[in-house]
Image (cartoon, rainbow over all chains, first blue to last red; front, side, top):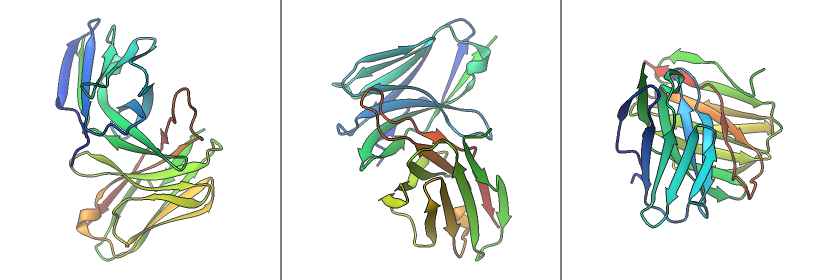
Length: 114
Length: 116
């Protein structure tokens, strides 16, 4: 039962253009949504998050959009840079007694072409 | 100065052995976690401890036993290792939740376990 889905296993974008990564979820009880970036042989690194009561959060080149009615969120990276090439994981969070249970999507491999 | 560190990074062992992976965080966080990334690359939570108390325990075999001697450490012991235990195990930690931005979880670099 995959509660968080990233339907695109890979995405290739030209340097300087916009990268859009998508994520769908099924459980309405999640209270936060997060994006993590992962390089090979490293742990996931936090990128940006959004509360379930918001519809947009922006941090520099990264913007996350949340559409609660569609249970969909997306990460926009603009302009894309070669260093953005990595695997991006979408995660949905439920807080349980102070601990945060993250449910991850299966990841999207982003490649930025020079 | 690594925030969440886990050892060993690579571990190759035979079926039936017992092994441990250690994790330490120097961020002063109260909550620590173990996540597993399987061969299909799915990252799934296994356990969570909040100030040494077990909070989350997903459907993980009893052969896996977390131990938290203090809130800065969360070790993972695995008994009678099986081939299917081969995976990357990530330790993580987080501070108490903040209403403004939720709870950022910080991950270690992972421990690659191969059971042969």
